[in-house]
Length: 185
Image 1 (tube, rainbow, N blue to C red):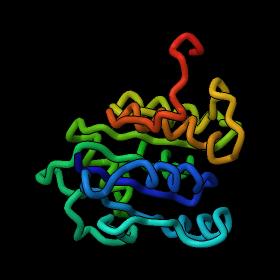
Image 2 (cartoon, rainbow, N blue to C red):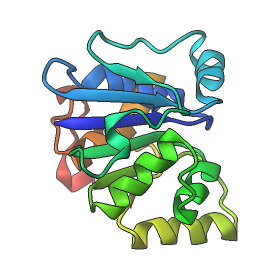
Image 3 (cartoon, rainbow, N blue to C red):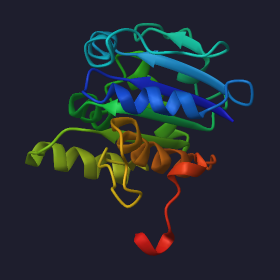
Image 4 (cartoon, one colour):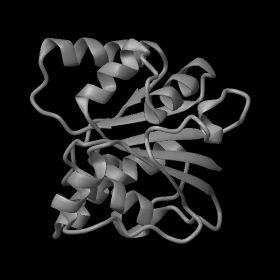
């Protein structure tokens, strides 16, 4: 699978780290893009940089010289995690002025899987309308709303309840420890 993972300046860097921990770069081509504020938030929340496995391609948010910003290059899915409501709104408006926004625009126009993971709460009416707009355009909006069916004992396990949902949307296996009974849902 060819994946684009993007991080914005929203709180929730743990979700991206836990997702990176679950996807094998030897089995998948992974491109990681950071918005201008993402690295700052990652540093503040995780106490340093992300732990990124060898083989993951890292990009800044100001280059259009990457393969996934063109519809002629086939990628399977893009996940923006965490996704700020500002980024979601700019995706809804189709502004395409950065690598992340152009890639999201390409995924929507090519009908490829685009998963947006906002962590913002509460929403205002503008947020809600932007969410509807991106959903109507074909995006999957997967709010970072952790579940507690599995009785998580650590912050990482709480975050993994969201990561399991992301992996499910990507069609990738979830770690066995975080599968819960279907009857719990």
